[in-house]
View 1: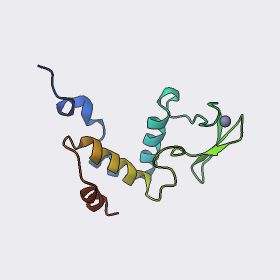
View 2: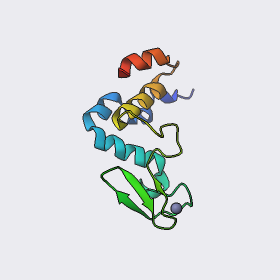
View 3: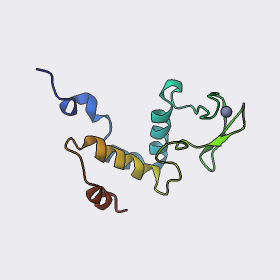
View 4: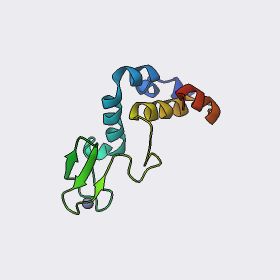
Amino acid sequence: MAQHFLLSAASRTLSLRSIYKAGEDAAYETFCQMRWPETDGEAVCPCCGFDETYKITTRRKFKCKACHHQFSVTSGTIFASRKMDFVDLLAAICIIVNASKGVSMVQLSRDLDC
Ligand SMILES: [Zn+2]
């Protein structure tokens, strides 16, 4: 009989403890890795698909070298125009995906204090 995925070691790659211990910069890097896995976290323009960008590090944005479109790691996702820190967004993702029977948004709101 096959083991349930949430019981396997492969499912334990993202934990709340490791997210908060690593901090905001590591959470941002994780977001980049999740958004652009085929380029190992290097930004790809959502407008034209060009994979060479200028990094605007002070605002955590990118500017495409081909079409000059400015975008961030959350552009075009449900996290666009976010107000929360990347570490809290990643924690929310972790709580939701680790809850095998689902989690209510009231509980998530209390867990993240938002
Ligand atoms: Zn572009």
